Image 1 (cartoon, helix red, strand yellow):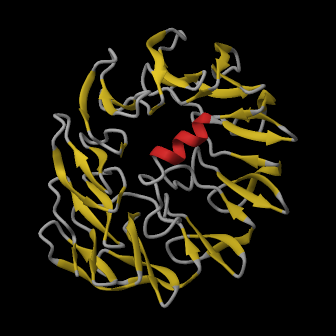
Image 2 (cartoon, one colour):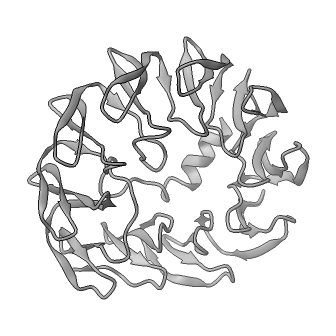
Image 3 (cartoon, one colour):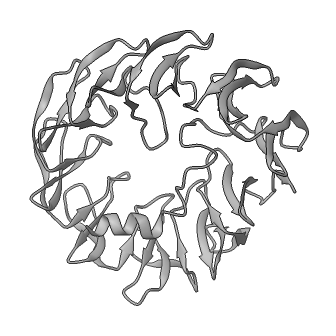
Length: 365
C-alpha cells in the first residue's frame, strides 16, 4: 500500500526509536541526557553534570524518575541520581501517573514508584506512538494470545478476547475481532460494530478507516463523514488531511473537498503551517496551505516541521531547517528525529546524542 511505502521511505530515519523502545516522556530542560564517550548521564542546559555518565543507556524524566540501563538491565533513578528502583529488568517503560510496565522472565508486569509489583502475567503491552502507557485510565495488554485492557493496578477491565487493539483516544479504542475492526468505549461496549478492514485512532472527532482497499473518515458514532474513495489516507491535522488517489498525494478539508489536488509523489501532513512533499520529478519542497512552495532546494529527503524546525537531508547528512529555509542546525548528522520540548535526537559517527534548537551538542567524545 502506498501509505506504507511512504512512511518507511520518508519517515523511517526520523522516527527510529532512540536509547530504547520502551521509554517515553520528554527531555527536561534542566535534566538532559548527556553522553560521555559510550556512557550516559544527565546534565543541565549549561552542561553541568548532574548524574555522572556511568550508564549504557538512559531514558527521559517522567514522574520524577528516569530509566537507566546498567550491566544490561534497566532500572530508575531520581534527578539527584539516586537509584530508586534497581537495574533488574530487561525492558521498561517510563512512569505514567505513578505506574510503569516492566519486562522480565518473559512476561510484562506493572509496578509503582516503590517497585511494588501489581501483576506479572502479560505477554505484551501496547504503547501508543509516543509510548504513553495509560490512556483514558486503561492499558492495552495481551493474555493467552488475546488483547484487552487493564487499569493501572493490572486489573482486567475489558476482557482479553480481541486479535489486536489500539490504545484509547477520545474515549474510543479500535479493536480487531476476527478479521474486522470496530470501536469500544471505556466500559468495553462495542460502540461501532467491527466492519472495517483497518481502523485508526480518533483525532478531533474523526477516524480514518479502510473498507475494501479504500479509505474514508467516520465520526464518533461510526457514520461516514467522508466516503471511502482514497487509496490511502492520513489523520486530520486540524482542518486538513493528506490523502492518496492513483498513486498521487493531495490534501482535503473536513468536507472531503480538495484544497490541494493530488499531484505529489509523496507527502506528509501539515504541521506548523507547512507540509513536506515530493514532486513527480522527485524534487523536495515545503508547501503552504495554498499549495505554494515556501521552501525548496536540492534536498534528498525531509520531514515535517515541529517546534519551528524540520529535518532535511542534503547528500548523505541531515540537519534542521527553520521556516525561512535556512539550516538552524547544521547538516552534519547521519540520522535525526523531530524536536520535542526544545531537543532532538541525532546520530553522528554512529553514536546518538542530544542537540537543542541552536545546535548545541550534549555529548563529549
